[in-house]
Length: 210
Image (cartoon, rainbow, N blue to C red; front, top):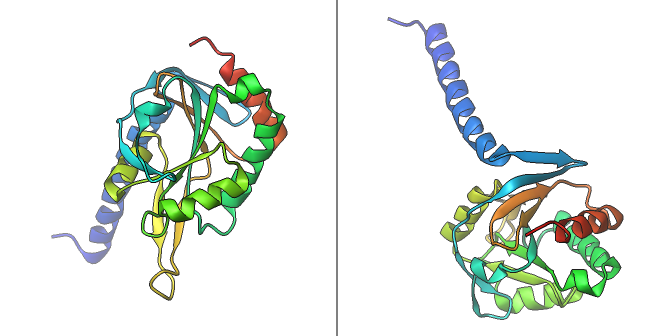
C-alpha cells in the first residue's frame, strides 16, 4: 500500500503527464501544419479550418464567421469593460488603420470577439467600436460558440470573479489571431502591437499569394 508521500508523488506525476498531453496537443495545432515565425508573428504554411460559428454583431444582426472570407481578418478576444488591454489594442489598431493605404484597408477586417456576452450587447458594443473606428466590427455569442472559436485558434478566456454581481473581469489572450481570405486560421501576432510594426505586418499579409 502506498504511504502518504508516495500518494502525493503519484498524484503530482499524474497531473504532469496530463498537462504534457494537453500542452502537446495544443502545440501540435499551434505549430502545424508548419509555421514560420518572425518578430513575434507566426504564419502557418497553410490554413487550419475553423467552425462556421454563428455570432451576433454590434448591429444586432446574426453573423457567421464564413462572412469574413475574401479578406484577411484580425481577430482579438476581449470585452468592452476591459480596463486596459482591449482599449489599448483597439487604439493601436485604429492608428494602424489610418496608416494603411485605402486598397489595403479594403482587404482587411478588424474584429473584436467579445468574451463577455452577459454585458456586451449590440447596444453597448456599437458605440464602443464607433469610438475607436466605425470600420471595425464586434461580435459576441453564446458561451459554447465563443469557447469553440477560442479553442480552434489557440486563444483563451476565463471569468475572474470580484465583489458584486457585475463587477467581474475577464482574463483573455492578448494575441491577434489571423484569419486568411479562405476563412481559415493562419497564425497570430504577439504583442507589442505598436502601429508601425502592425502596419508592416499587415502590408506583408495582404501581399501574400491567396
